[in-house]
Length: 210
Image (tube, rainbow, N blue to C red; front, side, top):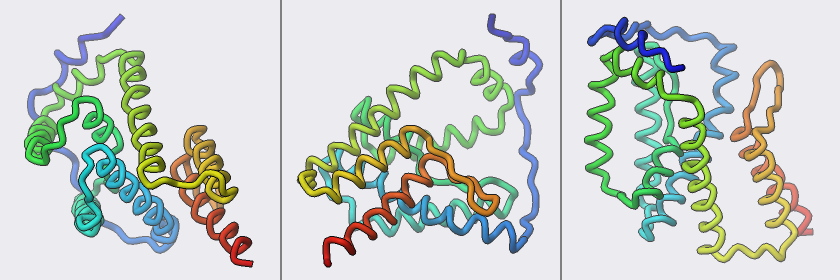
């Protein structure tokens, strides 16, 4: 049964807890490699939107990276977590075929306003997990198909062993959420898939040049 009492107990308005930033070298060294992952993720998202809309968004790639970086800096200055582009939004775009940037600006404003309402957060928490799980399957499935479409549009030659192996290994590492721990830092599926693709492609390219 769904417990709706949390909605009644939640306040209509609430402020987040702000924290001033602190700098620790050990934490910085652990986070820096994640930047590479986020750049690859951001790049992939822009390419996915390009494939869906049929519009070349490469000239705006720098703006995407800049916006991502500025948002993370702003979040870190008040004690928030790092932010990035989210595949869920791209999946929604693929589902409803609405690509207007103005719509996302309006949605962001609503999200900011609702973020100050604990009651709205309580309502979200009452959504059954099976519903969220089913939605996630559709959304991330659409993202995967958009990624495959990029291969088709760019006519990637899978008769070459390098392309075939890099794609196969990346899909298994990412889709299987393969986790790897190095020096106390844990890489999730996206991280292992990103580094795996970069390293494997570089190594196999050396072999081809020889």
